[in-house]
Length: 127
Ligand code: TYD
Image 1: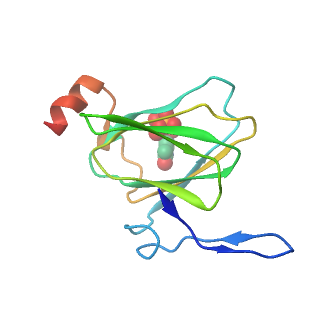
Image 2 (image 1 turned 180 degrees about the vertical axis):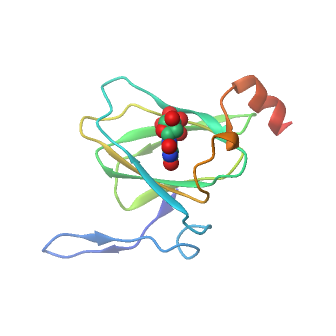
Image 3 (image 1 turned 90 degrees about the vertical axis):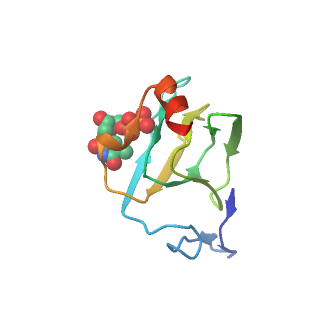
């Protein structure tokens, strides 16, 4: 979990992310996940090369990370915290609150060949 800068202001707070400085990669792609129906899960895969940084810009959700040996759940519910997901980590997003908004910064362009969708293949890959 990485704490981001906060510029507190009576007019409303401001936070920001600079590549390399606040997160350990150059930002090649940005996407966001929103309008998630109650109970739905996103993710459930790993990337061979892509690294990500996930921020709950609004609302809350959990990110479950799994390195093939152990599994840990991170609750994201503040827009000034983000979760760094290195390459080669299985990740799933769940427990989205109503109107939650997940911002995801990624280190590579979208490439379906970079995905590992099968958990058994992932376990073999990390071995
Ligand atoms: P996917 O990464 O599988 O979403 P999640 O991890 O939340 O389940 O992507 C879902 C679909 O969106 C898939 O068809 C690929 C497409 N997609 C893009 O075209 N570009 C992107 O940058 C991303 C993240 C997904």
